[in-house]
Every structure is written in C-alpha cells, then in structure tokens.
Image (cartoon, rainbow, N blue to C red; front, top):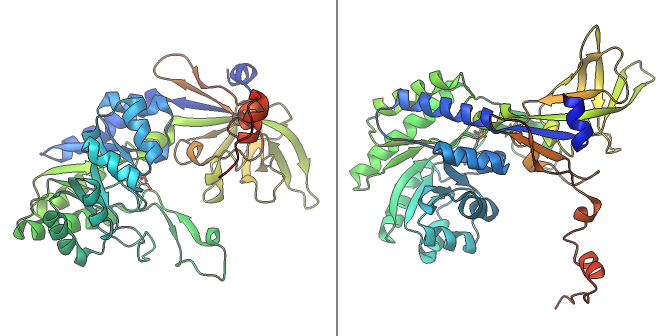
Length: 413
Ligand SMILES: Cc1ncc(COP(=O)(O)O)c(C=O)c1O
C-alpha cells in the first residue's frame, strides 16, 4: 500500500492520521476529567504540528488553542474558527499586533516576563496569566517565565492595570541543555530530549502553582485556573500522570480549573514519514549506508533524538545500516544503525514512525521540494497538501513573481 501511495503522490510522503489525534485527545481529556473534580481545559499546543486537519479535528473535540505566534493565532481564529476566548496566547515574543488582536478577541494572554504586563495592558489585554519559571529538566535556570518570588508583585501590577489574573501557568520543557550555552561548544552538543519527564517534576510544579494561587488569594487575587503546560506523557501513561498532578493540586487546596497544553502527547504518534531508498553503499570501515530521499530537512528532530526507522517490507534477516539523507551534508543522518533488511535496495520504501511532533513544523525547504501530506480521519487517505512544485518554491520571491507576471519590479524604498 505504501508503494502505491508513493507512486501516486511522490516520495518522501507524510501520512498524518487525524483519527489518531482525536483518539489521543479523548484519552488525555478523559484522564484529567477522571482525576479532577472541577473544570478541565485541554489547550492544544499549535506549534507541535499545525496540519489543518489536526487543528480542525481537535477544535471539534473541544480543544482550546494554545499559540505562540501571530501565524498560529490567525490559523486558530480565521482558518479553524476557534473563538477568541478559547485561545491561550503564550510564548516569549508577543509583537504589538498579536497583543492587539488578542485584546480585541478577549483571548487569555500568558505573560512570560514582567515587562510584558504594561505593554499588554496598553494594548487592551484584559485576561492575564502569569508563567512561573521552573528549572529545566537538567536543573538549569529557565529563560521562560517569571521567578516564583516575583509573581505576587506581577499579579498586583496586572490587577492595578485593570486586568484579571486568570491563570498561573508553567511548562516543563522536554528538551534541555546539559549546561547553560557558552562559547566553548556549539549549542547542539548539549541538547538532551527528556520526554516524558519524571512524574515527580510535574507533581512538584503543579503543587508549586497551587501554593502560589493560595498566596495570591490571600492578597485578594483569585486565580481561576492552573495551567500546567505541556510535556504530558502520551496515552496510556496519561492516566497515572493526571492522577498524580491533580492529587498534588488538591492537597495544596486549589479548587478551580485545571488546564493542560499537550503537544506531543496528542500528535507524536499520529504521523509517519515514508521515504525511498535511493542508494546503498559500503564504507571503507565496513559500515553499510542506506541513502534515503528524506533527511534532516524533513526530520530535524533527528539532530536531537534518533527516530525509529524500518523497512516497509521487512522480511528476513536484518543488518544495521546508517541511514543518511539527500542533503550532501555530513550532518544529514537519520539513524546511526537502523535494523534494515540485508537485501534492501534502491526503490524500497522506508518508514520513520511516530514523527508527528516538532518535525513537519520545523522541516525546511532546504534540498528538494517539500513532500505531499496525506491525511485521514477515519476514512481513506486524502491529499491535504500536494507535493510542491519548483514554481511554488519560487512563488514568494518578488523578482520571480514580477518576471512571470510582466509587472515591473518593486523598488525597495
Ligand atoms: C508553553 C508551552 N505549552 C505547551 C507546549 C507543548 O509541549 P509538549 O509538546 O511537550 O507537550 C510547549 C512546547 O514547547 C510550550 O512551550
């Protein structure tokens, strides 16, 4: 079947299963509803994968939208039709236009730093959240959020400017550096992917938010929601996770809404990438190299953690193979030793599985044109995005557009 899909739509080829996303959403939501007696909100982290069929399916399931840039905001509002008050605006860089739009639509804006508060108030934002900084997975000081001891002052500032402090937020990062960045080595040397984080980290962060909410209540600021961010383990592990964090919140005396912002837990398992073997060779040291037509241009996450790669028709004995991509770069490696059939040959199909999170969205136009995306939502595969053409590759280059349309080139003033 994979070979037929490739014959029809080209290789490489993304397969994005919106039905699997719906199922993961239902399980995550059910896990938190079972664990928490009050209201529960699940806000999908748009940046993880913004395949439109996923966004629509999640909105139909009842998800809020958690966005970190204006493009994501407009996708939620104008393409998917999410009401403004069901959007959570997060992230460290919120340009004035995004703040103004969020204010007009009555979206919830989570402040990443105290200096944002006055700018947001001036833009008309009324619904405020405060992101509380927690150390990274490896203990380093986080660049995100406001230090815990400065939260009461930040909350008072919001109140004094006429905003409602609706939520205390935190997010436990799943990718961290083993030491703060410094000039002695490149950033990627220290990157570690740590997902899911140990349950105790989430429990400690949830309890910290609940205690802080108690402190703010004593100051007359009643927080409606605790927003626990993302990093949630994928089903079926979500049930134990939800129980542990909700128990901690309850024990600290909070009784309002629990909000979560899953990304990977909903989409990681819903996308595969099909690719074709283009060449097979032996290196001088005896290693076998299988060269595919997809590389780190499509799976940039391979630079942080090796994806699972298999041959679609995998009968018989296997032998480890270094899988590399088409970019003619030494770093274009998808796996150092995938177990691939001894007889694998050009034209055979490989599949990278569970690559739904932070891959399509971070893939680039470096190298060949971008592949087609097929989606299904309980039915057959349909084309969500066809394979790009070279004309589309150049489509937004002003000079090319002018040359092809016959209109004069625009002078840059
Ligand atoms: C604020 C915020 N919420 C949610 C998420 C989603 O995280 P995950 O995909 O690990 O669930 C992220 C990811 O970076 C984030 O920054």
